[in-house]
Length: 284
Ligand SMILES: O=C(O)C(=O)C[C@]1(C(=O)O)C=C[C@@H](O)C=C1
Image 1 (cartoon, rainbow, N blue to C red):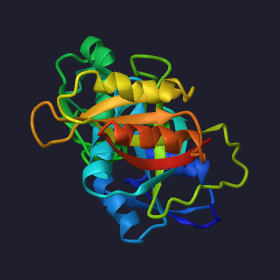
Image 2 (cartoon, protein in one colour):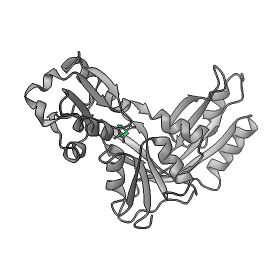
Image 3 (tube, helix red, strand yellow):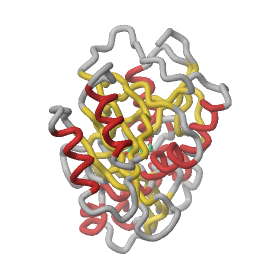
Image 4 (cartoon, protein in one colour):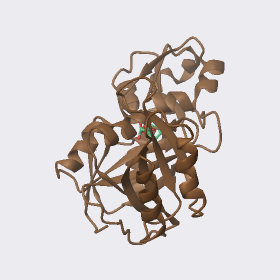
């Protein structure tokens, strides 16, 4: 990716999405958007050259909003993947540090709340949970209401950015907390990032099975298995067309080639499946 490229992310400042962009594209110009769909639309409308959006978290699983928007609304291509360690902290306005255990509300993004369920249950069971558009938005909200005994769950950058005090560190329920972010572009050109080591490649497919065919999923998996195409993820999502209608998202641990993946796709199509390539991209 060339330097100074414009990158859209879920804002405001100091979200994990901004952290992903800062870490992996330090020379880019960042533009923040209020929601993930707005960020994806911006890439479609050429307001930005790429959108960096959360895709999957170790504790909470897929970010369904991203996945569904890409599938149903805005078919951009995945051109790269970056993984960010996620450390969640509980932070409050400095006015309330002495009595932080009396907080009445905890604000954060639904994924961040879900990553800290055990902590919230044990440490502040009577605080009401309030969902925000991002962790950064939660921290910003708490900073704007210094009179209220409320807290945000967000990252270290957010505490510094919004002048909050961290009262409990690393409150995510499992240590190995990471989020995969994907880089979305209008054109499927593979991403090259100066100074970043490519760790491997993936090809992500969306597969719709023929309805009511016995053994269809088994046949789909066989098409990959006998070609020794390693799958690192398989997930089903509703097609939103009726109960029981699902499609599958499959990650193959390999770059699109000229033989193996195209022939697996051709085999799936003969079986009556429809297949869409969401991207073939490096991960860093
Ligand atoms: O709210 C943020 O900071 C985000 O970037 C969003 C998001 C997500 O959607 O999963 C990203 C990483 C963390 O897993 C928590 C929240």
